[in-house]
Amino acid sequence: MLHRLTVRVQPKASADRIEDWGEDDAGRRFLKVRVRAVPEDGKANAAVEKLVAKWLGLPRSAVKVVTGGKTRLKGLDIDGPADLAARLSGEEA
Image 1 (spheres, rainbow, N blue to C red):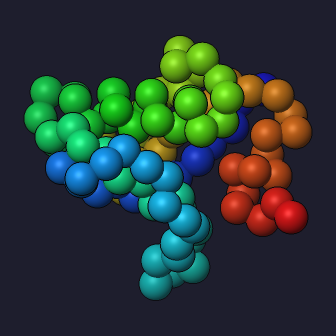
Image 2: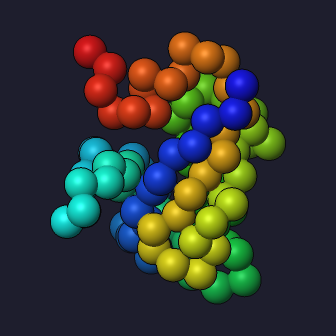
């Protein structure tokens, strides 16, 4: 099943890590992600895909940046099981 996740990326961070859920002024939720990679030649995007896949326990090929390739706010397509939806919404108990 294909899921969509919005992330806000901080490149050139001190460590690769998933932070927490955030919300913009319009009320859209996103996952805050920090990666050590620099934002050039797709390096930060690849690092985000790898980190999110590891966080979700999925193969790296299951996560793909599909929007926002050159911006901090990115849309990811994630190919995973149906029960992944709760975790991706940021509202799981």
